[in-house]
Length: 192
Image (cartoon, rainbow, N blue to C red; front, side):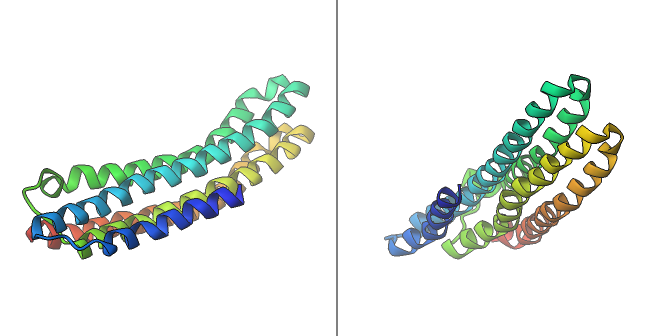
């Protein structure tokens, strides 16, 4: 898992380098590169946030399956814990949708953006991308450890959820920073 995450991070880090290695002949082409960077940020924001959720939900599901073989009556609590790491994927998707809906003039071509503006938009996706990719698997570890608590005493589900929510707090912070960055850049980019 660490190797695939490292390769994905390296690919994401090198993507802007490929853009700068090109020298567009005219300003219209430069606008395409800026837009490409912005879309790359949106795509990677959703992709990495969802990847974190996939890993997290899978980990909790594996732990939950073991518990449910012994105590099937805990299915509701186990499913609740399994759903928690899935929220990070939603954070990434919401930020990408915010870009798509709020930057309509840029996307439609009415307003062209420079490569540096595209890079600024790309950077706005980094907080949600990184925090959601990393927090979901760690939240899943907390939820998986909580399965052991539930196996001993099923009344402890609230405590497990509270501990898992503490990990998610940091994904939420990444979401908020990306949200505010996209909103603060909007006026200057749309105005031209």
